[in-house]
Picture 1 (cartoon, rainbow, N blue to C red):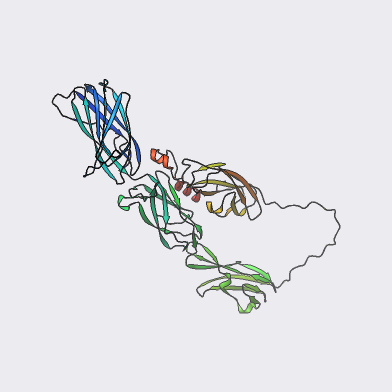
Picture 2: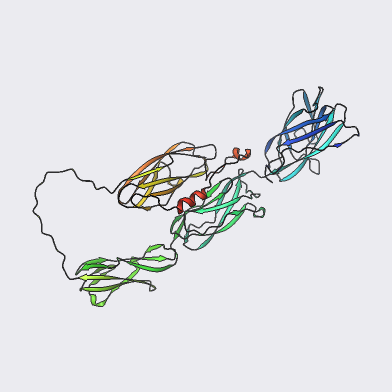
Length: 506
């Protein structure tokens, strides 16, 4: 049962104990539900809707069959001009009855008063009845019942288990997702909706799943990854955005189904060495370099000789080169051998020249932009997006973003490397996780670099916060107990899908 689904004001239609009852009370208790084994400040509101003034209010605490109080009363407060007494059957620390009374005018018609209690809920789930009796100045009483209930603590975090350390592309495996409350207990009453995402854009993931009461807060799901590399799976509660990232899974290429020999259609002169390479591909287009395991051959008429994957040409002609991998995958290419010896240019005389400053080759210009500051609650995680722009007129390869200023196990950048065409942009997803002990503000420097030597950098200030910070954040205990609803929060799953499937933009 969720807070908010129970009426916070229960109006008592009290039965009249005498024929001539002259007051009409309306009584409510707030809250009507809170977690097991938890203290709560209860407000008992008494309104006199008509008749004689109310001068006494009696509250009976719910009891077990052997008359032991189910809730433990710890403190009692009274309005000005009122006093209270309490009755016990098992000692002063276990009152079962609280009686407030006044020698003053009491609660007149259309007036109300608040009576306070601090009580500890029982350790079991359930719904319990409180008996309230009001007595007016003519000593006439009315009695009614208000119900309260206990629940588990709010959702605090998820745990993902069962993910393999290593798996082949295309193989299914199971992960188990467990929901926990802030006290470290499995939240057996969790009925939220769980969504899935992955750094593998080709992954086969479960559809959004609404937990059932019968799941008891734990559910297993099938996952298939298809892209070779280091992959993670993400789960997130749709409503609260509380999330969890799995451990890194190393995905290897699946069953190899084809072979590709390179270079394709090359040419060389007589007595020239040519190096050939071979890559095997699985059904998901993952490539594996198998050059060392390939058996190489060329037409017999070509002559020449092989040294592993390097062929030294012999006779002129157009010859077919064949590579065979494990006797089942075969690919070929054409090699044209020419008899013309390479022309050696004449050596120009050396003319002394004045020394000049060395010219440093340039390959273009790059920039990196994104969020300059981020707040994350200790023990939670969040994400940000950094955008690299190739501002030059040449394509850049193996463009990576490397963070400094934070331990590597606390940060994940996806993709690991990318090809960025001239004038185009590439987005990188950065996921940052903090431990409970991370409380100091730090500056993370993100450096973008390419194989061609072009680079750029920017700083992001990371501030540990006391409250929720975003999509990948577990709500803090205080916020969850207050029932604050996070409004207008875009889940990480939607961000991840937009980023990972978004085409580069000019």
